[in-house]
Length: 302
Image (cartoon, rainbow, N blue to C red):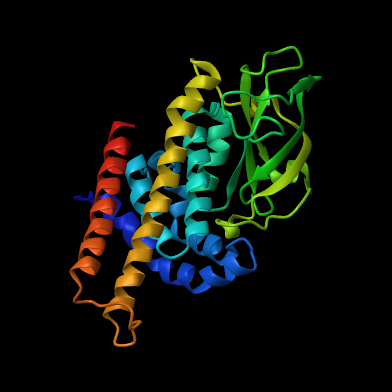
């Protein structure tokens, strides 16, 4: 696939940090712990502001750029790529739907790499269903009062800000959802457990209790309501970022395998002259190219 000059520039920035991501990936997975070194490096590259429009100091990237960069980052560390892609998902929603005051305040800081954002959408008994929420948002004397528990928040210990789904108020239906932004320093953030699982062990996706009071202009707005924000931004951008991460991890695994096969120290059980070995490698290559073509076609449609 041919890349624009912008995408090539973004990929060059990603290439700079991939060796650092790869250097810490095994440790991040084994402990398990959040890839703090990767986050610091990504802040310095400007890639934390990939989805911030240029007029706010960002890179002005598209979902196609997101897909390409996430895939490349995943070759170094899958957990790092996933956390970054989910941050970009939150940034995209803010770039399109934040009220003017909030956008003017947030977007330059996101472009500068000052803020890492986490998504708070999960709830007990509801899972990650994005189109509904149960915890009600309350208002008291013009201030939004937030009390929210989420069983899984990727990078929650380390986020500088949160995009949080809430039920509109105590009388609203579960599908009447609001997305609320909060800085970490505005909240009482309580970590209510650890993250130790199979796969994505470095995302540190912990349960959080969030409580605090916020300005009334912290709610994202859209003519089509919450469903527009979810269906036009958070859902497609999030799933494209996740898919690109898995694809990048699979490509890296194949590359590592081929390096081992070509090495003089390869296992004796691998016969590189075997037609069966060649056929199976070719099949894997074909699957990866088909997945890549489908992913990029979906990104183009979005």
